[in-house]
Structure formats: C-alpha cells, structure tokens
Picture 1 (tube, rainbow, N blue to C red):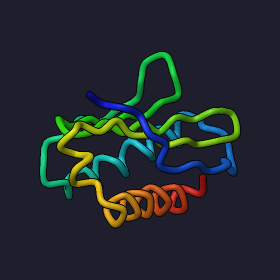
Picture 2 (picture 1 turned 90 degrees about the vertical axis):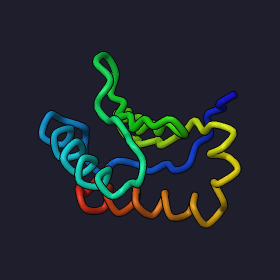
Picture 3 (picture 1 turned 45 degrees about the vertical axis):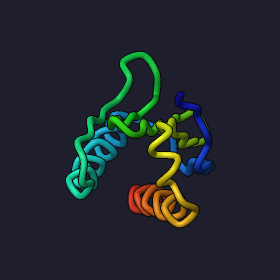
Length: 103
C-alpha cells in the first residue's frame, strides 16, 4: 500500500508558465536518464502537477500560484530502501533543479 508523504516545499519566485513547464520537462528528461530503472514523466492535463512514475515510487511536483510542493508515493519496497540519506539526496536534486530554473 502506497502512502503520500511531502518531501519538499518552496515558495516560488515566479509563476509557472509554458516556458517554465517546458524547461522543467527538459531538465527532468535529462535527470531521469541517470536513474537506474524505468520511469515515465510529464505534466497532468488539467492541473499544474509534474509527475515522475516508476514501479517503486511516484513523485509529484505540485505548483500553486506561489508555492511548489513535492510529494512521493512509495511502495513498501521503496520505503525499505528510502533511507534518510536517500531522501536527503532526492531533496537536493529537486532543490538544484529549482535553483537552476530560478523558481
């Protein structure tokens, strides 16, 4: 059974627009190539939510007018491997993308 947990929250410096969505998509494609298992990523059709899915975990980057909230749903196996070090590393990656894109 998966449960959602919040990993990271950040106030946005600028609103989400089409160019920023495209930049996030390109950066995610580049970073996902370094993950050692298959993933799918993309934007939800109706909401400002970017999703990265795998068989072990799903990550959600949810954008509101002024905030980015990143959460994850982890399988039981993923929860066993999601040490504090691994969670910290995931947050560092998310923060570096946000910094790079000046979010």
